[in-house]
Amino acid sequence: MRWTDSLKPLLALLATALLLMVAGCGTSGQSKTSAWRVEQGIALRADGPQMSLYAGVSGSGFTRATRQNWWQAHATVDSFSRLDEIFKASVSAKAPPVQGWQRSASELTLNYQGAAVLGSGTYTLNDYFERNPATALLIAQGNTVLLERYQYARQPEQRFTSFSMAKTVIAMLIGVALNEGRIRSLDDLAQDYAPGLQGTEYGNTPLRHLLTMSSGVQFREDYDGQDDSARLSRATFVGQSEGGASVAKLFNRRIAAPGERWYYASAETFVLALVLRQAIGQDIATYFSDKIWKPLGAEHEATWLVDASGLEVGYMGFNATLRDYARLAMMMARSGVANGKQLVPAVWVQEMTHAHFLPSRTGRWYGYGYQTWIFPDLDGTYAFQGVRGQAIYVDPSRQLVMVHLAVRASARDPGGADTQALWRAVKQRVARRD
Image 1: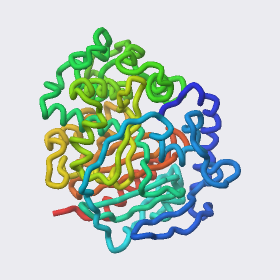
Image 2: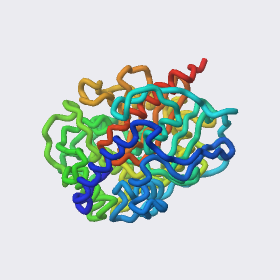
Image 3: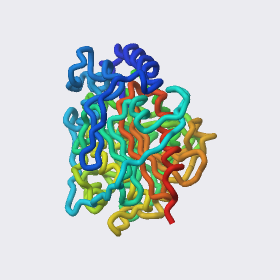
Image 4: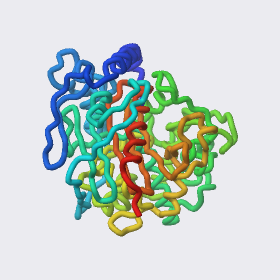
């Protein structure tokens, strides 16, 4: 999700790898992968499609990731499932009892109409895993897991990184803090809570416009290794060169009034994390643990990447296990309720998940709510999204969620259209709940 200067020479390599992946994943017959084995209803296998790319030149196991190679395609199977070991992170503790899952008697089966970018046609779930470098996939309705799979030797206890799915979690916490009166109003300026933002354009922006990515502050997020998102990552979790409110001073040119224009900018979520940290008077990881993770009944600890000041960066870097991501998603599908407790205010969930900006204004296929992507048919479904294949899809009308984790070859990998096609088929296959 974040390019660094040290990775610029690898752009051409990644582009080539992307072309190879698309060319090689067009049909399931072109892949030579092992059979799935099933253990207690969970499907696992040690390999997956395009092993020559993801396992390195030798093809013997997966490359061990470091701070230098973690973004390179051949290292991502390892790095994306232990990024909190590679970079500094804070911990959100869990607490008993664990919210258990029931498991369907048999795994969900379905056909879906594959996206043209990977080859049109009718495909099965097995085909999906041959066409896409998914590391883990879980589909659940209510309390029941309909499907849980792990590819590339990934395991249920591993924490997978979120990339920008973390933004939606920060928005949840803003709503909790607002409900508790720690944040007084969304019309307050960011600098009202984070004094270090005084005199900056981000500091002079109302919180509601940070939530909707409409601050009007110039920020370029194109993942080309030279954009503002690369500068942001260098100043926070990668380079550890800045930290805290000083980062906002790197992006300090206003080009529109707040609320006038939409433009995706990870810096807006970083500023929200600064505001949240000051408003709650404690670290975000602990607040999240107390307000959501413990009462949710999470099975494992969650972690957050931090900057040089110890602040959870918020715009990426949340890490959790597949089933715990599903628990979080199901809480949202139930209007903020888990285990009979209202963890996130229902009115806030509604505000987060309706389109404050329609697709016609975002210029994307999706509309946008509060740090949340809204499906264009405006049927109440929405998504958490992160680059390189991280996605959570939520359909409250069915209490249906799908968590998808992956190692797509680049931030601009077009294969996400196939994931959306799979989600459409899941919705058609699974009945609405009464």
